[in-house]
Every structure is written in C-alpha cells, then in structure tokens.
Length: 473
Image 1 (cartoon, rainbow, N blue to C red):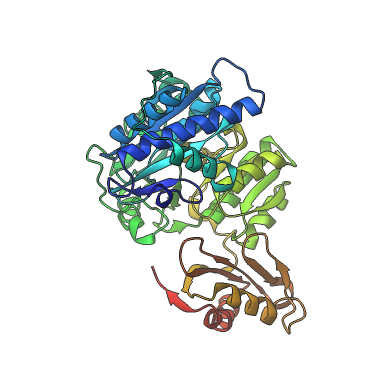
Image 2 (cartoon, rainbow, N blue to C red):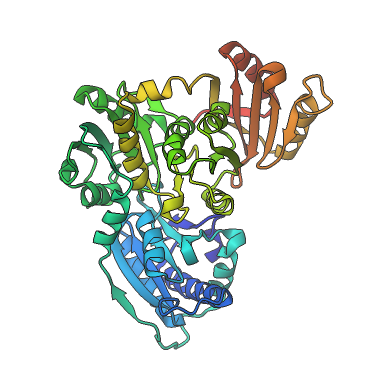
C-alpha cells in the first residue's frame, strides 16, 4: 500500500483510504532517517542539523497527518520545528532561515480536497524526488513497524516565523510610490492565509497597493473551483472580476500557493513563458550577464528576450527538481516554468508564489505600462499550448516523429532529447515542437510553435495524427 502514494516528486493520495495516519508516522520516520543521514554525509554539524521543519496546508486532514508525521520524525530521533499553517514556500524559507536538515510540507497542492500528501525537501530546501532521496524515504518507511515499541527520542516545538518570512518576501516588492490594483484569487487555498499576512488585509500594509480578495476563505478545506490555475476554466471568475473592478491585473494561486498565473487588465490569461520573459529583465538589471533558466516548452521569444536583456538563456527540463538544480548550478538570477512555478536566486533558488506576485507588482509599477502592453511584443509567434494525446505505443510514436521530421528527413530538423523529443525546424520551415511522455498515463504531450498561424495549423495537421487520439481536458 505504501508504494501507491509515493510519486515521482512527492507523496500523494486520497485520505484515509490510500494515505493513512499510520503511513504518515512511517513516512515521518523514513524522512527523519534520510534527512539526518544526508546532513551528516554532507559534513553538516550545526546545532540545527537534527531539526526538520514541518508545515501544513488548510485541508481538513492536514492537522492529523502533520501530527502523525511529527511523531514519526521524533520516534526516529529527529527534532521538529512546527511552523503551523503556511504556504509551501514558507517551509523552504524556514529550512534556510534556521539552517535545518530539511523539511516537509503537508499538502496535496492543486488536488481535490479528499487528497493529501507530503512535499519533502533536504538541506538548503533542495527538493527530494524519486532519484534524489524519495526512494530511500519509501524504503525506510516500509521497513519500520509501528507496532514495535520504539521510544520517542526527538522533540517538537512550535515556532512563529511570520515576521521573518514577511520581511523576506517584501524585499522583492517596490511600487515606487505608484498605485496598483490587483484582484487575487486565493482558490480557497493557502494564499488566503498568506497574502493578508504578507501584504496586509486588502493590501493595507503596502502604500499604493489595493488588493481585491477573492476565494480567501480556507477554513472549511473546500474549493469553489479546482485550485489549479493552469486550467483556463478555473480563471473565469478572476477574469470577469479584473474587468469589472477595472484592476491592473489579476493573480490566481494554486492550493499551496507555490504557483500562480496572471491575468492582464483586459482579463486575458498571460502565458507563464511570456511572464518569464517580462520578469527576466527586472532581475538582469541587478545581475547583468547571468543565466535565466526557462522551461524548454517555452516560446522562442523567451530566449530572444533574455539575450536582448543581456542575459544567458538556459533551457531547463520540466519539473521543479530540475529547474532549481539548474538555477543553482548556473548561478542564474531567475527562472520560470509553464506550470506557474517561478524561481529566484535570492530565494535560495526556490520557487515562491508570493515573491512572484511581489515581482509582478514591482515590474508593473516600474514599467508604467499595462500588462497587455508588456506582453504584446513578446507574444509574437503562434502557439498550440500543451495538447495531450492518448496512445499506448508512446516510444514507437516518438521514433516515428524523429524519423519523419528529424535529421536526414525532408524537414531535416535538429533533434534534442533533453526532455522528451524536441524537433526544431524554426529557421528552415518556421516551426518547432516538443513531445514528452507522461510518467503516469498513456499520454504524449505536444507543444508546437510556428512563426505564423498558417504554419501552426499545417504542422498540427501533420504531427497530431502520429501521436494518437487527442484528449481535450
């Protein structure tokens, strides 16, 4: 049963049928064993290196799961700093602020309310995924027997770090005395707690800022709409409100507030790759010549804008594990992903929805232009968006794609396999595409871009039939 809740990047399942209280205790034991050994292997011997930060979201099952997780950590011998009801980036901050061995956030992010889970981070808030330690956590958790009488040798304490966290996030906010009005959809998730704490009720703590609050009540652990801002239908309420309120923009957060999506003043959704291109200039002014990491599915315009701003564009694999590692390795200043994750060098290379919001507001004030004006020159190519295709023979389809459009074919496109298959015919024929396999479903995911709509439609007609049955959801 334990193996069913361990995913590629976290632990997740429905509660209490798949994810149980006993599992939470076992996982806590396994997490402590892994994190403390990892810290010791790295030669870390600071006083806090036996400490594990634990935070939780607003789901009704989170208090109980957090309690059992903490008990498991303590049973192994780890000490716990319980930071309470927080957004996921708060845990990343706390790990670094206190110099702990790692941390765990109890959350199921954008999943429905019956789900819950654990996001595990190690030293410096580096993510723990299947290849970077989650498999070891699973192994440790599977072999410990709760029925065996084990003494609880670790300790637990609650600690309020809100003042330090607020100060940290507010470093990224500078409106320069200008007035900005923003509608924020908290999706009944942790942004409903965090936004008022960081920016004040309705933005009252920031001169010039006005926040129109939407879906901020998270006391019941239920959602008015799915807390996933990547699904366009979940943004409909926000889009209408931005126009009705005559706001400068809208921001929608996911359940644990580590991701966000922006809507411009006209109520139009701003692609996260376009937003990456807008924001990168802000960070490159402070750190000229440094790298900006971007999702390899992004429009070609992102790399072009990074170069134009004096930066070094670096393609990143999809997933926060890879983006954070690339940002750290390249010593870059900023990174952005189509999923709505944005990464900041001055935030320990970690992602943060609150810092993304602060930066968007600062850039809007700094530029003195509407969001649509900032985005328009960047949205210069035609994009398909991510399109899913159902197919069992994924490898065969990818092989045919390479043979038909790759090197040596009539199209003679360049081939890259950093993440899935990327075929680039942009200079020769005016298009490029990336096709990736789903890790969990019989799906292929296509992102196609062209210099114009006609080429986009033509190539969609040639590529799509080779990938299986289109799935619109």
